[in-house]
Amino acid sequence: MMTRDFFEHQSRTLNALYEVSRVLGSSLDLGTVARRCLRALSDNLDLERGLLLVPSEDRSELSVKASFGVGPEDLKQIYPVHGGFLGKVYTTGMPIVVTDPTSLEESEIQEIRKISPPGEANVVVAVPVTLDRRCAGVLVANRSPQSATMIDEDLRVMKIIASLLAQTVHISELISKEKEALERQNRELQDVLAEKFQPDNLVVQSGAMQKTMAMVRQVAGTDAAVLLRGESGTGKTLLARTIHFNSARRRGAFVEVNCAALPASLIESELFGHEKGAFTGAHALRIGRFEMATGGTIFLDEIGELPLETQAKILRVFQEGTFERLGSSETLRSDARIICATNCDLEGMVREKKFREDLYYRLMVVPVHVPPLRNRRSDIVPLVLAFLRTFMARHAKKIAVSREALDFLQQYEWPGNVRELENTLERTVVLATEGQTLSADDIPVLDRLFPTLAPPPDLHGSSLGHQPQTSWGFAPRGMHSPGPSHSNISDERRPYQRAMLTREEILQALDATNGHQTMAARALGVTLRQLRYKIQLLELDPRQFRK
View 1 (cartoon, rainbow, N blue to C red):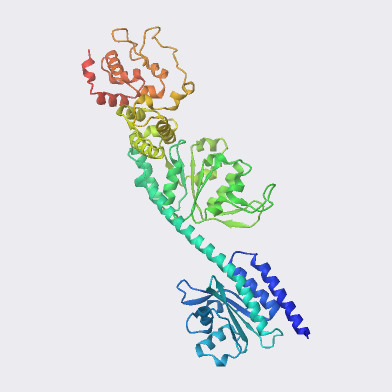
View 2 (view 1 turned 135 degrees about the vertical axis):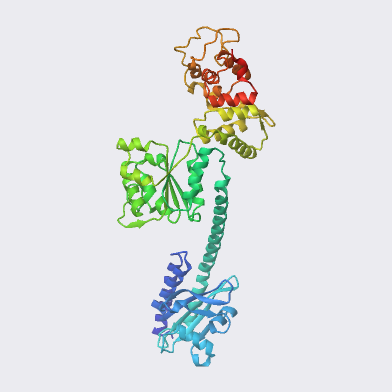
């Protein structure tokens, strides 16, 4: 006949299993799940203290993964796989119930004392956590001899819970392996990026760019705030990455924020994050960019586009490294290094009260000027060759480039700087035929593709009248020359036209100006340096035109 104690024990057992079933789906963290399972056993089955032990990587010892009812010093205990009764459970895969510790060996008795409260002769129940026919851990708990529950029933429940925990152990192992793989891939990617963004790998031949790179090398090893100033398309983002990957923060995140691309209503949420319910549409907690960049670098591109109210909060992060998420009063800290970039006239914006003066001076700790491409023409040909190699490989096409095309590319103004050069060369490769040798006319610069965008010709004041002209604005040889005073001829030419000077046109200009190179350059609409370069290239002697 069933006794009242039996029904009570069954009820408590079912309650324990129900609580454990709820716990198993509450978290993916093995330690959290195991600790809650041990708590359920304690509440329902009088199991006073409990441990989940897992093997080390070399499987030579067992350490505590989760516990309940033990002190902090007990969490540091290490149990050998060989020589103790817990090791027997792990190696044999068989459960053990210890009711009389005096019958055990000394090493086993020492383990019992670690698990049981001092001065009490408790019963110890240990079961293996078996996964795919291998032992993945040991679940152990001690039980007071005065407990109303039955030992064999407690052992059965412990086995059930151990089998349920095995699935959590399996998931934990999968997550751990995936995490290790991702961390390894992340380290490998960071090493590749660090190698890619070494200063020596960048195309730097011009004196102006060498000064910039010298500054980049100098500031990279510090945590100082950097402001990159220069026209759009000059490579400020590339330099920001170079600074990051050559600093002590290279293992941290590089978080890029384009301030001009974010709406004013969302920019603070992007930068600082928000709490759930902070505003309409904030359905979940969002981590801000400053928080993401902790331990790394945050790059604020186009910082001149920030609203004034956001500038004040950015200044606080600069000075104190603190901020709050939207909808929260909790102060958070970020030690992210801040690199900024702008193509704006910050000084003019400060005068017009469009940019905070205190933030301006805070940004100007280490200003780095990035020169436009037209001021670093000796870098153009190496850039062209590097870009062509990249795009020929990307589009599986082989083409060649003539000296004439290189001259054109080097003398073109490139108002869009390196970005325009890169896009132009990809366009060139896409439109070229296999094996083609590019001439100057084959370079599809934008003002050739869209001539309506070029500056309109300014013919006012020209004394050329109706004289017949060549395509460069010179009268044919033997006719009246406009003379050197008509420098407005250059206004009729688009930038790529000024760069393309033929031998005939240079001879006409030198003849018309009696070999005066400065006047000839003015008439041709080019700089004296450009004209002298072409004269040297064509092996001409201006002295033969002197009269």
